[in-house]
Length: 425
Image 1 (cartoon, one colour):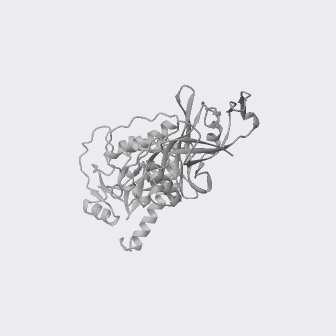
Image 2 (cartoon, rainbow, N blue to C red):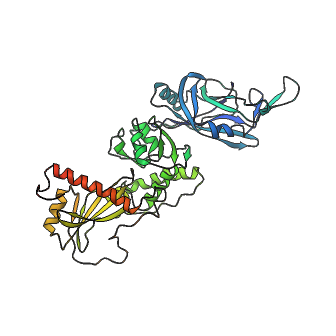
Image 3 (cartoon, rainbow, N blue to C red):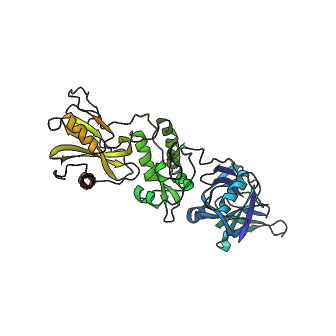
């Protein structure tokens, strides 16, 4: 295997994620081995081989991370450099040590290992053994290593700065990564996650300021594929576009001050995929459980938790109730968002008691006055237009699912003795 080394002042971008950026090879100019690697020589490997292993000193027994993004970049004249973004495995001692060495500027040179697929991939210029130059047009990139001394000129680590997970909360800084256009199942991906803050931060765009950074419940805007090994992978463009739509469609429970940071994170992924994100609009979240003229409203969950809504007419305790179902932003599951109880069937006292029995978080009695202007959001909007990245759900199927959930909720309440045992469920 052929190896080429380059001095590179690496940048430790994020300690929680173990992200390091560096120029790991120079192309287009003669290196210390008398070779010229063509700027396009890495293209096939980048397309086919990622993620590529990151080793320490070319020792296959010392795997410390993986290459998650690489791109030849023009520097000046004929000189190109291979910009490489690596993710050190912060779950291992070797990975943490490798990151620490880069962040502390103890390691400043990088070396790539590669094979030559075919003899025709290399040509020679000149006849004198001392001055002959090899041109490498194509190579099979196998690994990249941190080393003490290398052969490729003008290489430098792009930057070095660590950011402890305990200090960075709220909107998670954006990061360069691979991306895919595959189908997205948020519930499946969330269930696969194994690991603490490092894995969670690498796959989400927001973390709760007051939450435990080691718990899934503290994170929102999951948008990275999670492998069967529980680790994060490429950013999913359907999840990214859904997240951006939710930010602009007032479907978010994160603090207003964090919306811009989350937008920047998601928008960067979209730009890297060659797509232009829509501008972020300022927004106030809608309140679908506000008081109505003819209905008492009982809020069960915050409206910001959902990205789409459906209503269904039910009979509960022998009285009509309009149930508002919402689809959860993070999981795609349907749950009860609020109840609307008609005033001609429910007195305020009965409706209030109903809300308490059903664990409501807010009760609003009917106003009795229809003073709303045209365009008020008495009826929950159908957000199909903004939810372009989510899988389509037929209204009937959604209601069937929600009705089953309602029956389960009633059974649970009955088991706890909340309902009168003589009433039907």
